[in-house]
Structure formats: C-alpha cells, structure tokens
Length: 349
Image (cartoon, rainbow, N blue to C red; front, top):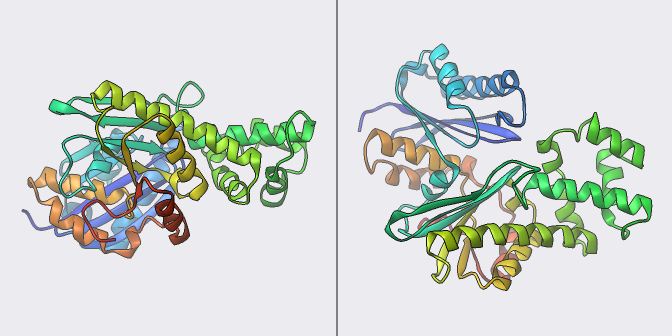
C-alpha cells in the first residue's frame, strides 16, 4: 500500500462533502459546499461548489494535491468536473466514480453476497444484487418522471397539501402553520410565487421541506402522516421490484438505507417498515451510523490496493466527524418498531 493520502467526494442535489484521509483511514479534513447534481443546477454552479469543497479540504489538511495518491467520488456528480478541479490543483493520480449503491455496500467490512440498497435523498432509487451476482436498479429517473417517494416528491406533496388546506379543498394540517412560521409563506400567493419564482423553485429546496413534514407527522398530524405513508408505499414498491427482478423476493435480505430523508424522524422510518411488511418483504432495513463518504474512502483505498479499505473503514467509523447524525430518540423508536438495525454493518457504532 503506497503511503500518502486519498481524496473522497460525495455529493448530491443539496450538498457536497470532500474529505482527505491517510491511506490508513485517519481523517485529516472534512469540507462541505452546495449541491453538485448537474440535473438540478447549472454546470457553472455545481463546478463552483465542487471546487470550493475540494480546495477547502486540501487546505484544511495542509497538503498539496500531488500528495494525493488516488481520488474518488460518488453520487450524481460529474466525474469530468472533479477531474478538472483536481488537475487544476495539481493532482495527477487516478480518479474513480462509484455508484451510490456501491458506496453503501462499501460500508460492510464483509459484503453480503446478496443484498439491497435504498437511496432516498432529493431523488430515490433501489438496487439489489441477487444470486450469481445479478444486479438491478429501479427508478432514479429524476422527479417528476421518477424518484417516487423521494425528498422532492414529499416536498411537492406537502406544498399541495398546504394549498388544498388554504383553499378548503383539503383537510386542515399543521403544515400550514409550519410553512408560515418557518418559511414565511402565509398565504396562497406567497406559496405559488415561492414555487414558480422563489426559494421553492428547485427540487432540492422542495426536498428540504421533508423535516417539516416529519415534524408535523411526529406531532400526530394526519395529513403529514398520509404524505409519509404514500411516499413509503412508493419506496416499498421500488424495493419490491428490485428484489423480485434480482431473484431475492423470498429471501431475508439486508437493505442498506442511505440519503438525507432517513434523518427526518421516526415517522418516516415507521411508515417504511409498515409498507414493507404490508408487501411481505423479508428485509432488514439498516441505517449506517457513519456517513456514506466513509464508503467512498473504502472504495478508493481498495482500488489502490485490494483489501486495503477494510481496516481503514474501522478507523473512519470511529471519527465523530463522519457520524451520520441519527437522533438517539429516532433510533430507539425504530428499534422498538422492529425490522430496523442501525449498527454500522459489522462495526460497533
């Protein structure tokens, strides 16, 4: 294993994270910037965010780009942009792009032969690997033609519910008060303007409404709970399709769940559990307690030297900066509901 450092980048519609680590898994720096999904924002904006995160990570680590032996990224970001950013910084090593499911499975020290991944952030998709290595992916097409049950989908459902409540066409909901208090959107004209010309015009900003929906659902709001139930049902259908196509429908399968929506609160997790049970899915839904970027580091190190990432993964899991930030109350409630695990796969949290 060559001595030196690796650079990992993980990004999506709302944010990007860049990390510099030693080849032994010691984290030197973590930096963040805005969204980098080229489907959600202009290329100039995603490039600026990527450049900002990489520059900050290298600066905080106190190293030059030519000391980085390998780099890798994940998520819906442009590998070409990353290569350009790194080349301008002086990096000349290999760069790799890993899919979100590949990174999620990278959080397992011993990867199960048959498993599934559910990604629910601004967008959504399910991936499964079945017997003889068959791999399938379902959805991930981008909202509104896909990404069923995603943050963007939930956000639009919330906006519609609030408008219907204002109109008198829908049931009263706490979301009306939350939109007013948290977003300053007190009436229909303000909401419509925010969606078409203002702060809610982008998919990632609508996805940011998920915590409000989860908060209202946790308070017992029937409309908010229905929104989460409908999103969970769509996601369970997506998982079921992936398992069926991969030949896993009748097997007990671990499903690694990654994406910002899972941090919203226990109401969403509970809804997903019920939706999976209703479809007779034999799954164990697993929330990693470390951020997915740890999986990117592991994949980069494995690309440099086969098997090198496993030991480093254990060191990464002990770094508080990579804690996934899952509320203890949420984990306790999910555990009580059954069907969930939250240990980092094979690692003590």
